[in-house]
Length: 442
Image (tube, rainbow, N blue to C red; front, side, top):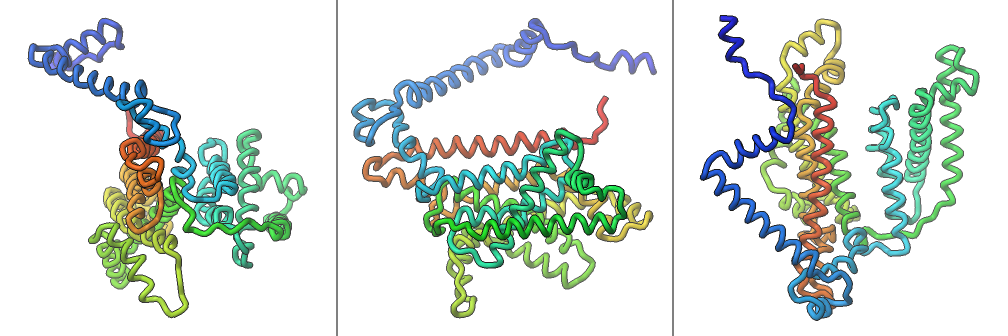
């Protein structure tokens, strides 16, 4: 039997060479007359498609013109990309004041700087960095984007965000160059590294308080020009809505999923009702309800602008969908994992936070990223209720006096932009799957 099984075991394929590639092509594409005909026809169709796109979109296209009529005078057969180029600022920033666009760019750079340590292997404390990104960065970015007067609460949160950003940047630099941490560095330069834990804690709290007070006094002189939310638009507005929706969806979904699995009847019923209520209606209905019906239930004098209403609706809607994704991941974990955690003395939260949830989230990475991609694309629905996100700005190009009737080129540009963003998220998802994979390989 051993000899028979050995003879039936297929040999491992040799590394691909020129001959093996040609053999693969012959076997898979030209193995028979029918396959050869289908291959030739498919290649011919692809050739026609690529040639048509090249001629229309590149070779005969117009890249510089002052109006659509001028585009037609230059080339009647090619695309008129001049309209898209002239509207690039509006596509990316909406009607945001052009002299204040630097604030959006600085806000984006601060986000990159804040999140960069998450991709540096030597940096420790990445969970804390991620939490501060979710809960503190929006206050700093929000003031950059909106400006105006700062109340005491906003001043406190902006100061805390600046202190956090500086601390994270120094911590990342120390981790990358010295394989150390900010806490170790501060204790070493203050001479408290040999002291007791209580003294070390007091020293760190004193340094934190001093840094916070200094930053608070410094930022009191800031005064950015106020930019109303009605001037927000383009890709910037799309990122704001989808970014907040993505940041809230996962923690909100985890809370709702745990509530639905809870053994407490009240929490379980409330969580289940909330999830099923939002999952039973389309997003556009939720948006209309948030912008038209929600204000009717608020007391007199209580007003929330439409952008905040939309963000709340998007967050709640996607948290409910994410809850089902997380619940599916929790159900995929064997029951023995939870029982084993209880055996070694871990309570409910310790079991969920240290044993069950990390495994569930790792299993559900494709579905989680798929939901994030859906959030990014579904954000375009806000154009229906009067917000000029990127889709609204692309549609507005065709209504401009100089570019009236220009429909295809802006929408194709938007489609290409969304493809790049979604494809990048998908590739990063595959990278995470490969990095976190624990499957045994031969």
